Length: 209
Image (tube, rainbow, N blue to C red; front, side, top):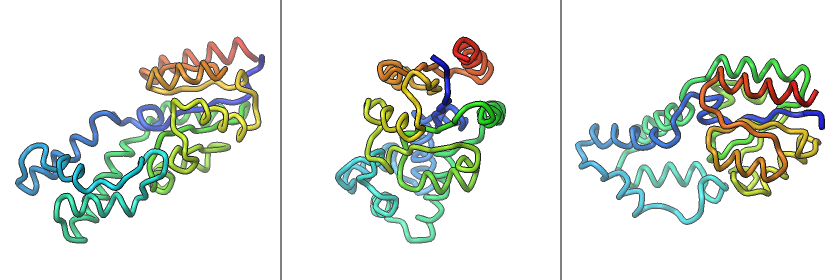
């Protein structure tokens, strides 16, 4: 079967960011700034957390902002700064080598992005990196109410790109998401570094011209 579409994850792939560690670093920096004990931020969040999931869109950006503000007792000015720093940490830096490769594929393939995300991510990532300008579709989990590795989000992405599952190759940094993509019928690669991923994707694309 010919590959007709290439789909990339964002965090940890197109963006150089460790999704497992940045929240802890960001919270720790505010604990130090406010003279709080280690873990006080997380404790405050647990107390003020709204019900629902951020990643499937049940919690809005406005609700998250209010939760952070209440958890730390911040005024509006400090809350604005906290939110700016959160988005800086969330988005990290662009992996230019991988981004350029992804952009280059669009001349021969449909390209898409599939990201577990939170309200505000589309705005912030577009402002920084312009993802919407270089891809055919972006599926953000918080906008569709589904998140990887739910099989339904892979089916939705396939439908939105207008291709069959076995016509897609996918790059994600989490093995569970890659395994789910393969179970959905996609070709998929676990991202570890840019050179290796570009090589592995090239092999798959060459094998399915």
